[in-house]
Length: 204
Image 1 (cartoon, rainbow, N blue to C red):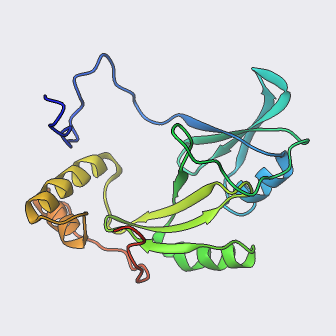
Image 2 (cartoon, helix red, strand yellow):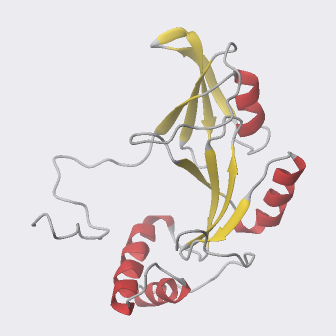
């Protein structure tokens, strides 16, 4: 493949020395324990499943949260660090974290964010629907729901098929018609969730 040829989009495993089997956990530099638990456990509803010293620096505490499917999000926290007001952008920095939510709870989620004094935006991203807010440190948090019922073990296959169809269609990004055509081509029932109307967002 030449440098001018874009990498292929495919659900097939690449020719690599080894292959990962999934996401085990993500670790974030947090502020203090109280603010971190208040946002991730008490607002987003993630159980706190483990608390222990940071094994690389025992002066800090390592908090483990279950994001809902057994995948773990962890934080290094210290009570001498107040929550920050924003994140620094740049190469290698985390842009945002995204967590799956039940589409039937969308309205309740927005109401809970409002009650907690958290601002948010809602966008229709074509292949999924998202609520964006910020955690106690200003890190962007996306709460995302698939627009269509897709078996977990076929999600990559559906997205890659939608990619091919939208390219053939000459569209800039995947939209409902591409997702529906992909599901039909793969023999998956087209069941769309009832989600609120929303713009695609800035820059599209």
